[in-house]
Amino acid sequence: MTICMIAAVGKNLELGKGNNLIWHFKEDMAFFKETTMGSSIIMGRKTFESLPKALPRRKNIVITNKEDYKAEGATVVHSIGEALSEVESDTAFILGGGDIYRQFLPKAQKLYLTEIEAECIDADTYFPVFNKADYTKELLASYHDNGIHFSHVCYTKK
Image (cartoon, rainbow, N blue to C red; front, side):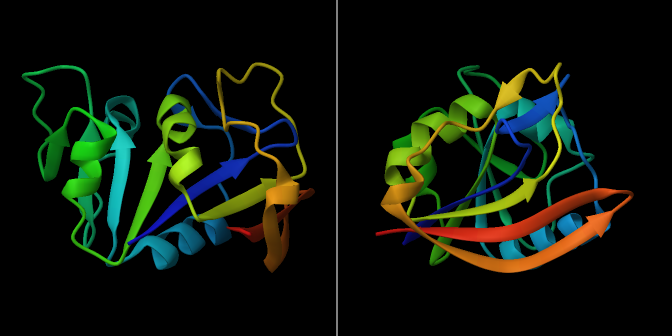
């Protein structure tokens, strides 16, 4: 199984604010959907709750400390190991939040990042700092939207 992380990050690795994404670009949403479709997706409870519903045509796995938590359309687990044991595809995508990314970073072989050339000074959730020298970087696409440049990149662990 290949463990991948997928996220949209600002210049300072900003991810979110108030349990929501900071930036919304149609090209990024399409990239996310296309990249994760048919795979198992693993996320924390807060990330799951930020979605309108479980994401279709993907196995949704939610990690939480809450023993009696129920998530319609998703499998609820209580550890990283348990989450990985529920994966039913060749690839598992980690969707966040910040703490889930930190826990999975050492296990991830690929990081699919949308690198956004913008900052959010009041972000409250960040992607973990990682050593880019440990990865090979591949530029997948670049865009401009409303004066903001962003790129889809894939970092593959060497």
